[in-house]
Image 1 (tube, rainbow, N blue to C red):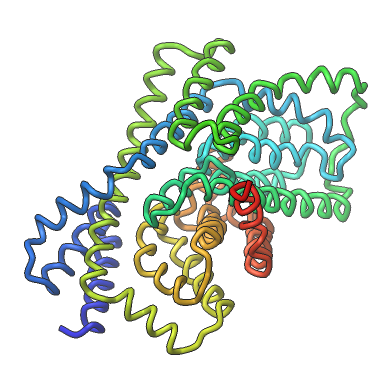
Image 2 (tube, one colour):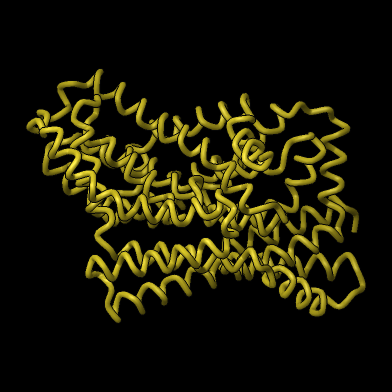
Length: 434
């Protein structure tokens, strides 16, 4: 069979398997084994065994279950409630007032969670009833929460950046550092849109809360200290050069257990439930990575990545044209697959094209996460939409419509990071040059 026939066959088989409801990991493995069987005479079983073991036998991947476990522990504490109480008094003068607590709360919790769905669920469970009780516009309350919840994918420690680093053999610490400025930029875009909306729609904003004395505001700020200390312990240990991402994940688990114990939320039941959920999620991600590794090796045998890279080079596509096409491709793919599946499914095919176009692999990881963030709020497979559907009882399409303005802000963020690559590269270049 020629290369075009192989590509078409693999594409049809993979889409058919995914459409049938088969697990993503198993669909990737089956497609990979089929490609090996068609292209080479080596035993597919032996190739799969060595490839799967090599893909999961990685020290960097040890950070994955630890960060997931940390997020599960914090999900069961009063951390979100304390954040709301600490941030709310300072938002009174900003246009949009407490709507900004959604955005800032998600940004702060993202720095200790690493999961978009966990960030959305934790902040939403606390903020939505408060905003509803105070008379805030429901569309903006839900939309800002859905959009801001995606910050859990970008602001380190990000689970999806760990997956990308493992799949592309890039430095996870470097990826973490590169995600800081784009994450802050995206949060600023969300806050800017919220402020403009509040100024234009004054009639849809509730009456401001009574003025809080400055000393009372300072006193309430003390409730932010636990989470700020946790962020400093985890992220500061990485950026300060005291710990690798894996070691920092262990520090995070220890600090989150201590925080849970001090706040009285640590019990045998919550400990075991957090451990079970973290184990389940970690196994799912590692299995997807194993399946993707089989497909990656198979793609190498077929020569499809090399052929695509050569095709791009011969066509003379500009980097902007390539990125525009990839953005559209990832947004469409995100309507049907979760973010982690998108990253591991496309890495082996896309990276040769990116290298041929002369783009930085670290920068592309941040770009990819920004685009994948959009998939969290696009139906029918938008995890944040499912979370908010459960919290609010609204139809998933209605929730998606509420989120549309924040989806557009993500497009603005992608345009900015493409036009100004140093938004992602300046901080790691500066810190590693010391």
